[in-house]
Length: 189
Image 1 (tube, helix red, strand yellow):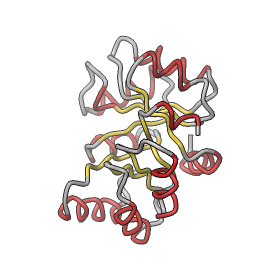
Image 2 (cartoon, one colour):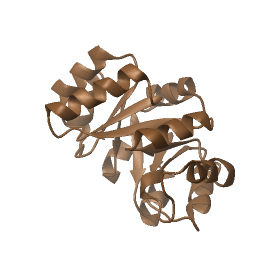
Image 3 (cartoon, rainbow, N blue to C red):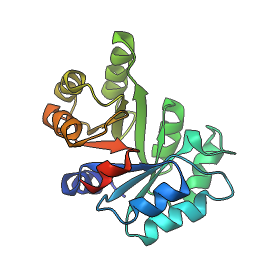
Image 4 (tube, rainbow, N blue to C red):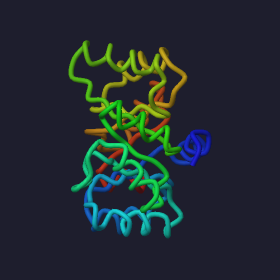
């Protein structure tokens, strides 16, 4: 999966299903979402989870920080690449994102925007082009999304606390390329 292919999928459907359970996985495979963020699993079952996403014809992005039994090492990134078939990873850790890019995986760096200092950290990372895609949480901040979109050409995904069509429209209009949500009802809008 290339960055360009990812962006094209977001243009087709800007809603990314973020799944945190087997039940959510089953439901998201029935949705029109082309991209699935996998937010659960363990070393022993992540390959099977990714396989189900891929069998549904969807792009699988694994939140490596949330997979039980994996750490932030280059070996963990290699494991995801070589043993799961995932298209990419999500991480809050810049070093893990760097390892994943070097391994040829699509990279999403997740940032929690809690104050203006965190916003400056995101800008620094954007300048360094450490990740293919930036995900910011919480996503229900159209003014912040607009500032970041004006600062970079990198795709921004807004996630967290997005619960309805109005939230989605506001952040897309502010400049986000897409949204990620665990709210299953948003997967079918």
